[in-house]
Length: 637
Image (tube, rainbow, N blue to C red; front, side, top):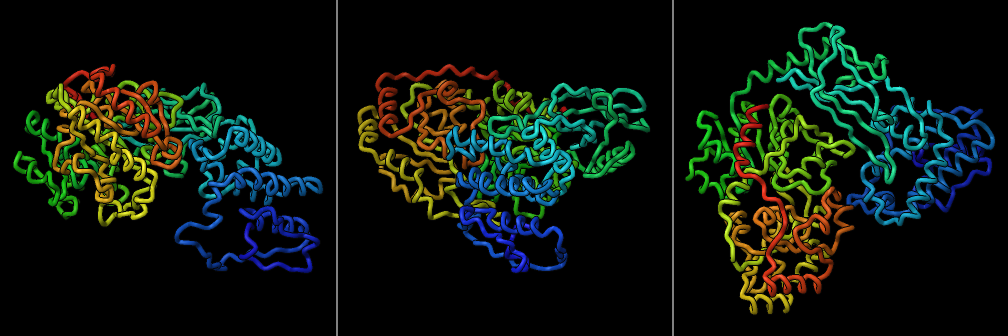
């Protein structure tokens, strides 16, 4: 029990129990009521199962409780004055009851699960404060029994969290007694098992009728809690013996339980599931659906579709695009078979298709028929840019059967051990991007054009509308630092002077999510804003220099051996609030040009580039023929 408002208390049993006025942010009720219950253990408490409590919630999420995660008080004083004082008070008088241990576990769960793999969420605290927070957690867990953690039943409190709590805070190594079948590949008769462990050297065997199953590939995924390892996850693809009669898994010579879809399973449970999936998959036709964005093509899917259309004539293919897209007539004229994602025909084609191929992971596509749309279909993620930052929190939520990458470091950062991605070499392939073949072919040199292409920020644009298939307009965008900083640069007199002195065209082409706000920038006449109908490749090929912030479009310029200037005025905020966190790519060390933090240095670097004609970078040009490589790996799955 954590809330005083949802219960009735006998005032004559308070026994000098008072609210702690120091706990203004959280847990003031929790501390009070659990001391009250502990003092009156000899009396009866009644919990009403069917009682209803109407909880008020602010729509704008502006309450103290909503904003607690942004306050160091929540991580320090609440632990010290709330949890620890409660535990110390009880421990002085008796053994800590299970119900109080459960209260603390419940409270800590919400803190810890928010921070697992997300250290950036404490970016507002310095290292001394973070060290103190970890020390307080260790003190709290001294009062929590190992068995209390193991037996704590709360739906969001997964096996992952139990093992992580025991390893990270109790330093306990728990014998593994359960593995989970996470995925079944019915086409190749393979199963993906996973389990959580503190020891990466556990010996794993999967036996079918006493014969060892072949390991297709494996991976060690790491979960971090700030500067500690929270827990490891072993992920292993095994060959499933379809003609066997028995299935046993051993870890360190111990027979362990096998869980599938939250239930203990046997060989025949998996066998019949594979048969069911095969039967459902047999209804698919040899049809490939391609998509970039619902309103726009001109990305990897368009380039790959064109190649397949010309070189694999027998393959039935359709491209998904809104009829009101500026690309629709162009592609129709070229011979593309098109379908509108708003039409019934689109849903029918998704139902019949065996492969969905896209440069984006959009809900209208992968959930066209509901949450199980992709269950017996292959989803091929072409990407729309190099994954240089950590996108694991987002991508791990998706079923991706084939994940196309463009460079070695990117590939290694996704499939390698001890990172946060769930993907293995079975799903991820290094081929280069389909659009790169045309990019290299159409490149132009000695051009005089500066391309300014900043990316977007999730926290300054509107929320996504499923009905509109786009984000809503956010008028508060014009109050953002992003608008002020880029606007100041674009209106700078020094920028105009450089334009006039060196006779360079200046093109401003921000991320599509920023385009709805272009009018508010009120750009000078000499700055060109290209039409949405202009090909992105044309912009890259005809430009000699790019100014961006964190956008992966910088890699397109790198492929063309053209330099980049990175304008990063909000690095800490972006990596703590946007959809990704910083990954393997270090902009200062690995980038294709200078990183600047303010407008003065940006203008200086631009002047130096134009003055010295220093247009070189050392990016390794990818080998050609990416289109055929991608096509072949699609055909292989």
